[in-house]
Length: 136
Image 1 (cartoon, helix red, strand yellow):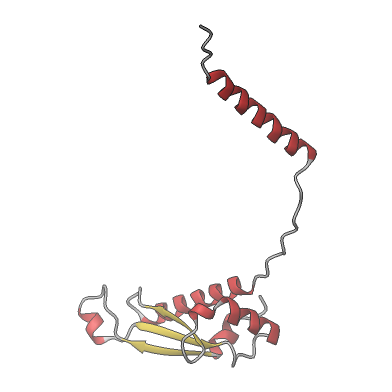
Image 2 (cartoon, rainbow, N blue to C red; image 1 turned 90 degrees about the vertical axis):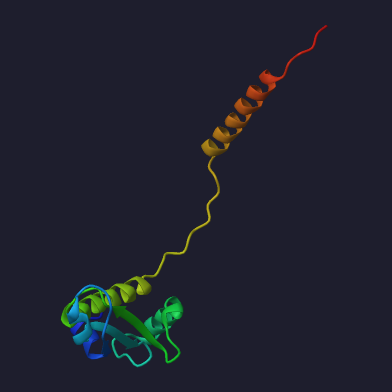
């Protein structure tokens, strides 16, 4: 992770609005809901390769303008909602930047093959013993 919280906050666009939920009359007066927009393409924090990876992994999270959108309206204060939204964005970007190691295909070993064949023989003998013999 080569981006900082401060650098990220400089590239983020905030939109605030009134939110529902807890807060009583405060909800009707204060714009505490925070909508955070972040442009991957316009960011200077990531290399071209990282931007491509982010676009692929976060394709479902991008809106029609190409922004990653994070909404938070859990807290009563706008400041806390902004902090939570930034944390969510950082978490989202960090997870998307992780490169998984390619899986190496392996063949089962001798012991695994022997164990499997042994289990098959045991199962077969179990079923064979269940058969009734009709020796009239």
